[in-house]
Image (cartoon, rainbow, N blue to C red; front, top):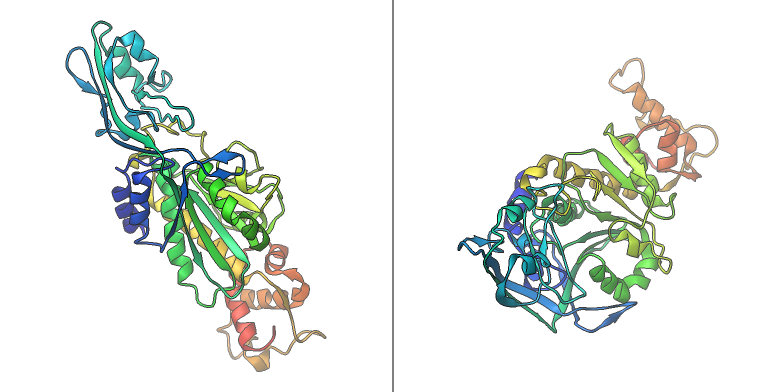
Length: 422
């Protein structure tokens, strides 16, 4: 999986994405090779709850020519150089005049910041603080931004993987940033490859929905159309973001705190052997804000690695390919996949031999002195499972009583089904 993750990363990396526009659509076309996406276009001016879909933005070129003739802030060299959603500009400015439209990070002088102006028509450039400080103070700067801001559409994409039930497990990720690795591409890549792993599960119990949407406004547009249905059918949901850095796992709870989404994620992390932390829901974050808003209040959490805003490279040009690990990204995909495995197994089982324990020997499930092949620990786990399979405890609760992962019960459940014990 690692090599495929990197291959698609390299193809998606150069594209300048935003909350609308052709860069977004081009990215969806590439992801569609991994996951069959259904695109929805939402027109400019449409009201979605308290928001309005903005004009569509597309950019072709942007740069500055300094007084000494050097081409700087070249959009084609790094698409973070232009403020996302900048209106078209062509003119000459002094350095003092230009400074009102220049963004740097003095605290990280070698980083280009990521700046947007989605809902107020403006323009600007982003430079490293080192480069800006070194530019001449005298003379004129030629500024050029070739962009369009006009009525069009916002695009989001989803895929529904049907199961035996209409009850849904929901995965949401955003696609709207230009070239950043952990804070942009790690989430969509993890979600797309998670689809591939889940699609290979036979006889799926749950239906799985995957959403790729521009952060905030795209998810609000999706919820305006599908929110009430999702609210009625969701069992658990997760927002995938910041999935690719080599830091430890962070799980951010839903507002419910004890929802199945939270229980399964925290159960697996506890028994994964991986360093991790669990934090409470807070409004500072990503699209869980929309899913957990009062009108929906869905059980949606977020499993990440290093959390947004907690690494210095966040929203800068330093969040690049060298910052992430494709091994870590694959590990995140597999952690989510293991959560899916637990959801598929997690039921309140009923032992059909309810009075005393069943005779396992005649079913080939109990060790004997002449057959030492049996694993006694596994036999104790089987007896434990059958003892608590009373229709009151689900699998996660049963596993927690032995302080172990529910994944250890996969073969036990299969054996009990074959033997007609549950």
